[in-house]
Length: 229
Image 1 (tube, one colour):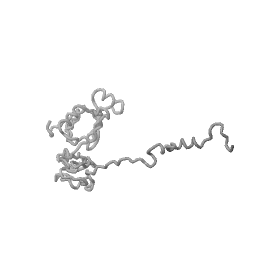
Image 2: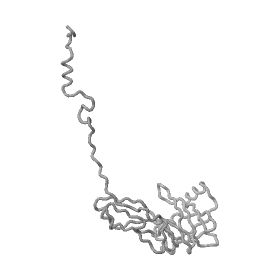
Image 3: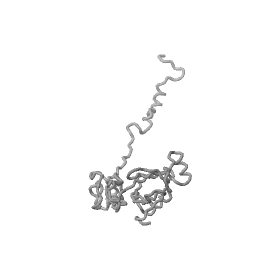
């Protein structure tokens, strides 16, 4: 599926609420909302058709030509504003769309993808990821599906910040430039546990020291022996 031919047909939705949403899901459909430029409207979405768009290689910020059945404005360019999935099955249960103007900049979050192999990791360092998405601003047609971060020269102790990235000239940065993206840290070695003083041997449990039992027996008077006789 070509990126310029991402089309999704939806239907206007009259009923709203939890019961109506459950009924739609039983029918294999899910509720959605189109947040328009001037107004918003509830719609019914076929989740399998939406999944086809994502499986085609289009990112979450792909521009979709939304066709709302029965509306005069046949096709509306939108992006997915929010997608809710079931925690157990990962199936789509609700979809929100945001109508856009192709000649106006919008703010979106784009995933950061690490590429290459860090020499610091090869030496035993641990890669700690601190930022997974970058917030940017640009025209809809200029939205990158992802932003690559080269880690092939990152040593132990290095920190890569947002300012270290190279962005296309038509993409503006919203995320703070000083925000760290990731670092390679030295692994923390676990110290061997050493027994505390008094833990070894039976003495630590309050047992009588070796020979004490015999000494007590010798000090005790024998049967029939009276003290002071």
